[in-house]
Amino acid sequence: MSAREFGEAWALSQLSPGIHLVALAGLIGRRAAGWRGVIAAVAGMMIPAAAITVALTAAYGVIAASPIARAALAGVAPVTGGMTIATAALLVRASARHGRAHLAIDVAVSLGFVVASAFLGVPTLAAIGAGALIGALALGRERPTSRETSVG
Image 1 (cartoon, rainbow, N blue to C red):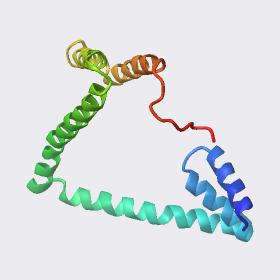
Image 2: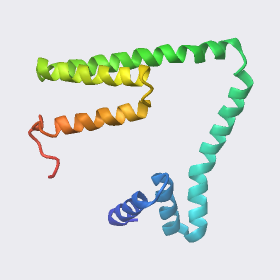
Image 3: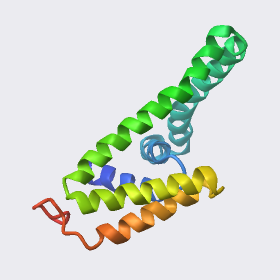
Image 4: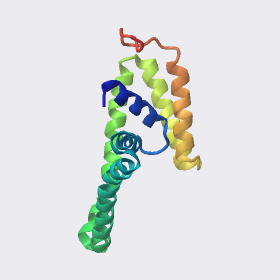
């Protein structure tokens, strides 16, 4: 298979819904051995992943009731909260580089959506979407910080 043929197969696989690598494997399998190659390539991609998923699900079913597993699952929420706070701190630090006014607006919008989600019953996804929209509108007026262009 030439580099061009692979590139064309890759581009076609990107158009398919679902897992693009499975589609790519099917296209390469078809090229190599026809419909038998498709079956072998797709099975080779799917069967190991399915077997691992089944094995992990069975193992979880066995240990789910143990005190150690319950303690581990109970510890996930605080760890997730800590990671979220750490990420927010990194974003605040990056925002502070644009000046105090920029930082104040970012913090006010973020706190507003936290209050809306936690106390006013606004769905979290709606708050995230609205925050992203406000950010896109606000950042749309800023000049890029990179000197390189994305089109090359």
